[in-house]
Length: 109
Image (cartoon, rainbow, N blue to C red; front, side, top):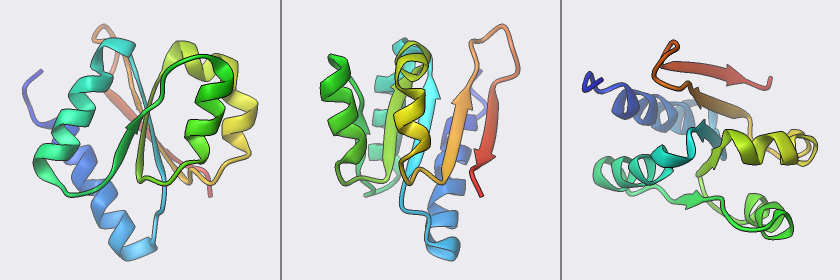
């Protein structure tokens, strides 16, 4: 906690965006931390972020809108996994609850 892991993950995504033209990053975290991700992205970059929220139909529409960072929580992902797998989110960050390892990053390539 307080070691700058979120900022480092954001910086890594910005670097991948520049070097490998990553267009979409799906950040999956506990629901209580989506706002923190949005604040940190706005604080350290000018990159667009989108909090995924609402009923399932609304969420599915949000995944398709323009943006770089898409901020979702684990409960949503369980219901939306098939549609998410069919989107162009090439890079995914999974923030574990604090009782586990803090982050896991996955590329879908």
